[in-house]
Amino acid sequence: MAKIKLTKSELKSQRDSLKQFSRYLPTLQLKKIQLQVEMRKCQQKIEENDRKQEELRNSLSPWVSLFSENNAVEHISSLVKADEILTDSQNIAGVEVPVFKSVRFTVEEYDLFTEAMWIDSAVDTVKKLFSLKAEQLIIRRQYELIGYELRVTTQRVNLFEKVKIPECRENIRIIQIYMGDQQTAAVGRSKIAKRKMQEDAA
Image 1 (tube, rainbow, N blue to C red):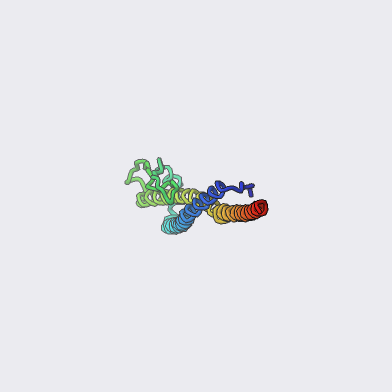
Image 2: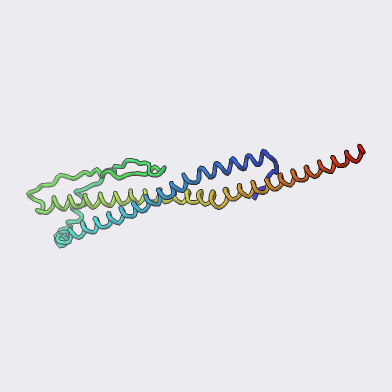
């Protein structure tokens, strides 16, 4: 604890600081709760995205044998190209985070007469799977950014609750005791001086 001046101006300064910390703390606590809620939402979105990816992969299982023929996987991959992941931004509890919108794809033209019957479905499924993976990356980025802000906010809450507010209260108590002692001593000195003057006058 830094050394404090035992003066009226320091007492006022400490009271002002206490008032400021006490007023700011509930805002920080509310932000911490909001960030915790958003972290849980992100976690749920990640789990939901994982479930959708799993379902999509399971829906591909009847085609797996077809994919293994004639380098079908490589062929479909060469037809579908992800050009750009489109995102927006949103302010969540004071944190600017990216929000997934869509993926812009380029699909090479192919001849429906020469391609397998399931090629359209396969291309569509690959696009959906890639979109889900891209969305997952964005949600994880949200989770990281919100998590960082939550750590910073928690540190500030702890600083105010456990250090700054108790420190101000203790400083106020010390200054008040000192000033009380000074006032008592002054009254004592005044009485002694008065008595001495009375004795001198007699």
